[in-house]
Image 1 (tube, rainbow, N blue to C red):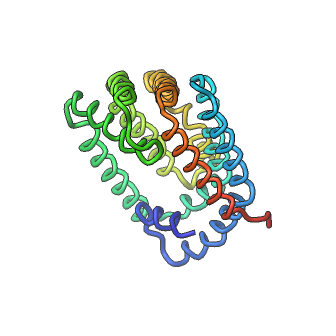
Image 2: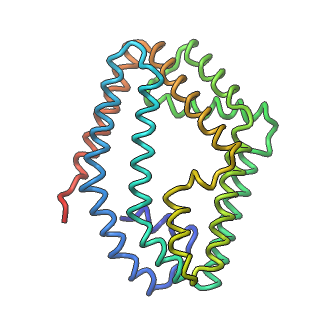
Length: 254
């Protein structure tokens, strides 16, 4: 209830009337999410935890977990689309220009952080980020695990460039639509853009995305295969804690 408006404020300078209009709609979305989606997340975490009982979960099992995660994101995009359409249609020219400026600033920072460094530096930083993300879940990584992460980071190659180019490609479609936000085709076209993002990706990015998903599933399988019992218990403990936290946030349907 505080994070969504806070993040929106980074991009949209809404006036008091727009904020008053958005507040009850946001509450409706949050009520839907905590009553319908959180139970799904808890089940997802439980099935993820069950994979840890296997010595080496197959990458295909992990890809299925990824697919369920994607489905959750799709359900959210479907839920918020009507609100997004009406919100964007109500923006004035200055608000749209401010939105574009915020996107440009984000893209510049992303380019400076992820694309401007030499490819060897991008790969090294990718490896470091993954190690930092994994430590809270697995604790100290062993040498075999760090070798797997290094191979994974190197195998992704120029993924940073493809990711940023595809992000800007999608944003260009959004800008084109916003210029015609009062037209009859704005709502159906924005619906497609929000709910079927993959349709607006380049062929190169779609191929790269599939490869990167498989690479991540393989990496996680390798990491679990080389995990010792303290690492597995640490991971199980964190997953149980997360399930408990989500269970405390569930609410009944309105």
